[in-house]
Length: 634
Image (cartoon, rainbow, N blue to C red; front, side, top):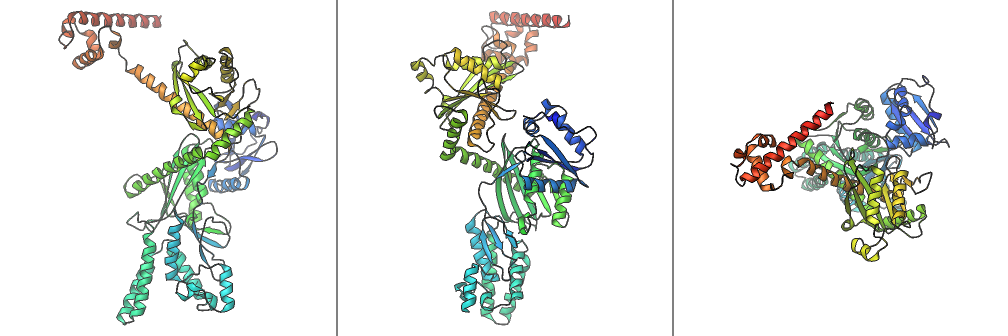
């Protein structure tokens, strides 16, 4: 690891202008790219106080060995240059995107003399215009089939086109009027180009002029008694309407908007995008963002907007052109710069806002629900994938140099609040999946136990009878192949010592430190740094997060129960029912304390003896509190 002070720029050397900066490692590779309104203020924050930095930022600055920057004119230029560098260098400490699947697009090869329409999976060819993405390939194929009846744009491959051109005879689509057959000269290049442009306008959401024109032409043909022509126009009109029906109407007006919702957990963010054109849902997609940077959810929203509307050289994606409105589930950072940048991309003003009411708010809630489902599907797919789980267990065995694959892994986490109500959780994964029947919760009994003492106590209590096969079979199915501690080297050392003391020192133990996601083996001066994309690290993180969730839940339950206790709970002879009756009658413990024994006896179930006991107990408690306050003042 590098000491950040070794490469910190000289005081005053960093300009105060807006700009973009790059952190590089010892090999000169760019590992992080960021932007700032004031380069001096932002970069100085990385070197001011190491302990106050976020763990991800600490990991980044200790992995870097140099930093450089470029000054730009304004925040908009900084935003554009930042994303350009992120695409160019793919820094490992910047946001990573994971698409759950490849979505279909409708591609039109506008760069060719006779453009072709086709359904493709990736928008990457130059000279091609892309519409979508769409949720289902079958839906866009049926839409293309309907549109080919109206606009006659060819869908054949280039080989078929050239063969028909050479033979002077069109393919079957040309004979059944689903293609205008430019291959045999039925239509010249200019007229064919006009049809292609019309279909592109229709796909872009400009549908009403075509519908109105076909209706007018059909009525005029009927008036002229050209019934065959009217029938042909009627069929085209029906095809267009069927194509529109495949895109759900979500707004009554001609709204053009993109609806973008985020749903996050500790490690990743689910993103759902709806593309609405002329009030209809024209495309949608979901993807996953890995939380690799120290930023708020609004900062990640900015990253998502950068990616969605980034310009690709030679590739025109219809949904990448910003609409008039961008509706977001959380306000993005640097909104003014984003508005200006998106306005330049669109060629007009772009409004970015969080919808508060009405249909747009309802659609945002739907998008948020879909983002949550996208994240859940991603995690379930990864955790339920047998190949991925087997790979994770195999990687753990190799990385930790274990003699056997850790088919059963247990993880311990401690939860406390300033040393009070200290509890611990122990979660169990078998074959990479949670085994909740074997989960355990512990109340720490050691007085004033710190984190290390709590770890020692839990390990000793868990493995105290490990030498006794009979007892072990009764409490757990079998000892773990790996014990994971939520913590660093000190916690691992405490756990290892406890295992040795109870005669279970042969059980492998490691720690997973939240600070840098480091894996700490026992008696090792340096941690293991697993690749961020490794299945082994993902499994350890799931273990740690599950143990943390369980410990926090148990701690809150204990704390809530303690806070609900009152002075009446410890009075002998006063049960829960009678205590509730007293509180209901007098309203508070203070009122009960000030009541006489005769007044207490007016409550049903309270006799003379119990009334005297209550009065004496509450008076004794009040006297004790008075003494404590006096001691505190002295």
